[in-house]
Image (tube, rainbow, N blue to C red; front, side, top):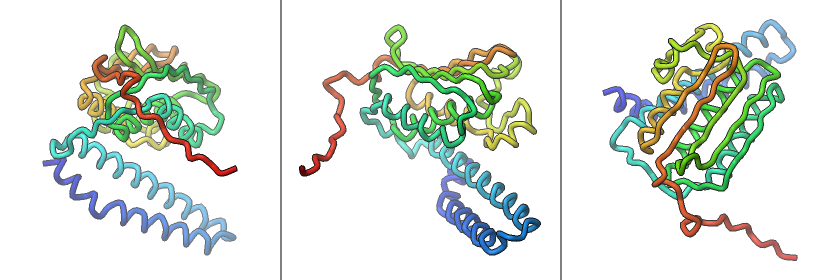
Length: 239
C-alpha cells in the first residue's frame, strides 16, 4: 500500500536530496560573482529544499499511518516542547508577526516526536498565512480537565466551505499562495493522524477577515501527574 511504498522511500530519498542540495551549494560558491548564474542556482536550491520538506512530510505521514510503528509514549514536558517549537519558528517568522504564548505547566503522556510535528505544523501555518504585522497567540493548558493546545491568529480567515477539507492531503485553498509560502500541503493531514494516535481531536474555528483558531485537544487521561514527571538534570559545573 501507500504506507509501505513511502516507508521504502525512506531508505534512499533523503540521502539523494541532501546530495543534490550540497551540489547546488558547491556550484553557488563557484559562481558567486556571476549574477545570472547565481539566480538560477538560488531557484534550484529553493526547489531542492521544498522537495526535501515534501519527502520528510510524506515519510512522517507514512509512519503515522503504518500499524508497524506503535506509539512511543513517554512523559512529555509540553511547556518546554512548545517553547522549543516557538524558538525554531522564529527562523521562519523573522519578526514579521507578534507571537505570544500562555503556557501552563501541564505534561502529557505522548510521543514527543509526533507532538513536535503537530505543534510545529500549526505554528508555521499561522506564520505562513497571517499577513505581516499580525498577531499569533499560542496557549497550552487544561480546559474542562482536558489538555489543549490552541494557535490563534488574526489573519485572513478561512471560508466555511473549506474547513471540512483542510486535513486532506494536498488540499489548498489558494494554490498559488500556498506554493509561494513553502508549505507542502500535508501539515494538517499530519496533525490529524497525530491526534488520532493520541485519541485527541482537532478543532477549527475561523471567520473570513477575522482570523482562525486551531485547537488540539487530548484526553484527560493523558495528563501526567506531578509524581510521574522526570526532571531534566542540569550538569553541575565545578567552581
